[in-house]
Length: 138
Ligand code: CO
Image (spheres, rainbow, N blue to C red):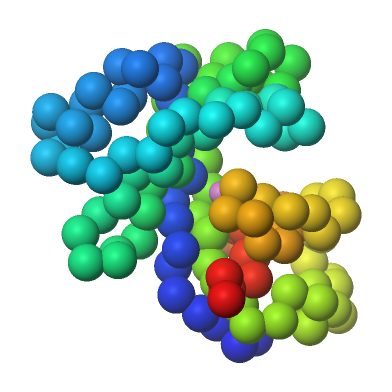
């Protein structure tokens, strides 16, 4: 694996406005993007920057109860860590490597919230961590 930087930590949140207020007021974040919908994933998303181009926090709120984030929140009503996202230089190469190692890839490679191709690897094959693999933005 050609492992790149930890791009973001995905957090499931039951209330996006409350989570944005928490990251501003309690955690001191100053750079939060405007929330936007990704209807095909059933989520509303807001990225929180950490200083100096550091790893972001991705706040994920469900657009409906039957979305994957809705399902996560039904088991974890207060929210919590949902996934880690690592960058790779070449998404197709990374996908065939995971595939070749017998890791279960969840769905097709698709365009993620940063506008670059992503895919997810099953937590049961990744030490319990749902893992998003993302091509490094150019
Ligand atoms: Co993500």
